[in-house]
Image (tube, rainbow, N blue to C red; front, side, top):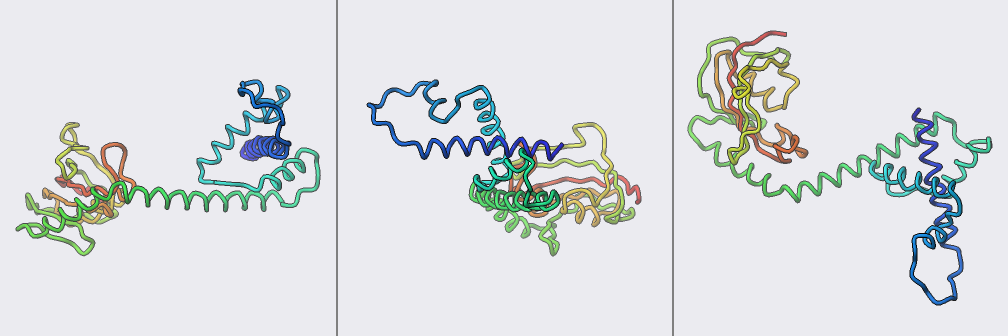
Length: 257
């Protein structure tokens, strides 16, 4: 199914490229310029039949889709050769395995470049949030009762329990609520009216580290830097990128492995 879709992608792009090349080499008209209508525009790009229009439509649609992967350009002449070879039964230069490897590598590289660009843009856009978190943590660690771990996680003991401490591989039963630094609550098991169980090694790093410090029956307050929370991307609409988070966590029970 993927190969069929790829072939359709390439055919659409190739037709678009051929139409653009044909337009570029056409000599400029000597007649006085007139208003460009929809019909004349179609003729300018070489759409002389329903097949041409359909092909061009596939090209623009699929090209836009490919662009969302991060690809910025292709060698359209070579692409057209591959298309013709496939359609006419000519000898193809690459095996199916080689072709798939090329595609995978190109998409992986494009995705990496795109992600880095997005992260750089987010870092500029959300710089005030990141600085707010850094400033808060710097001041918060000076408060009496607040302890800071080597990772930068900060916590405060609200209620000291006497039960067993969980390990990262354990499942735990907890009540909790989470807020941003401005006090906005984004999640709460208390509001839902029931605690939640989950494996401790399948949550954000700040939780995995912090809850292991808690004996069962304890209630702690955690101040979690963005790199131990949801990082550069945030989480949904409620947690912006680079957000420092505050959680009140009540460890009700260690369920075990």
